[in-house]
Image (cartoon, rainbow, N blue to C red; front, side):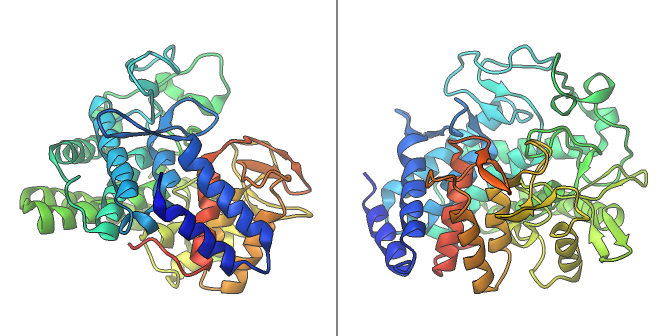
Length: 424
């Protein structure tokens, strides 16, 4: 269907003539997503399943199509598919900006018994800042990689105003927010404390977050990498508003909020670690409590340069990275086949393929990129696909045998190693 894909697969296989398995894995992962998870709808939008769960996550769906952006300028069908996803994402945000995952139609599937304001379109209503960041990022990257601007339409403008207004409300969650969330008969990480309001915190300038991108509840209410991502995409909104929409009001609105959130990050989220020096905490509450860790899911602290918040050589990022990739990070695990970052979302000691890919995408060391590809190749459990978490001493123990996001992170690292990169 997409004429450019075979050509790209052949290019990658030629680059890995010395390692047939990596080339074959790239082909299987790259085709798996587009053949099994992406559905073009009659209204020309695109619906993207996360894989083994019959719903579309705003975050996952962006990460699933991101590597296809390298083909979008030469293949209009791929560009149309991505533009259709952008349109559907922003339509969903206008249905409910607090929701993280949506049904293909208003069929009432998903977690309808949760104690929150559920709608039949919504699969799950765990509020995560990144669910609103990723669609803005994708709209911007589509523009940067193709020159298209047709998706910056009324749906986009209404949704972006909705997002900014919500983030402003959530700067003072305790007094202003209409959002609460409780799930009954579940593990603690699937619900919010204090009758659904979440942990105690104070106003910082950052915007409140209920859940991490893992869909686990936040320990503290200001999730730092997600606030960083909000700063980045508000910069995108500023640029789009000024250069394409000629909307100075929207541009100013985005800049003002960006500055407030960024000031909050630098004032409340920097921790002076005795070994690593000044670094970023994963979560804070503004009351002096810091959660020093990183999670494999994106956005993460490891992904700071990938997101565009700071440069690879930024001192605080280097210090943060040194912490993340050490046993001082409670989610960093070492085993016979791999060492890397995992998540409380999966069994204790498991490492995630997503985090291994991100480690490779946030280094300029080509040899390290190849080393990480080798580790990913050797921990596929013979499936030629990536998984969620796996046991570093026994990769045949893994979670999720159909996880499109992880497959495409592997593909993005392969392309990056080949010098083929998404324009930012």
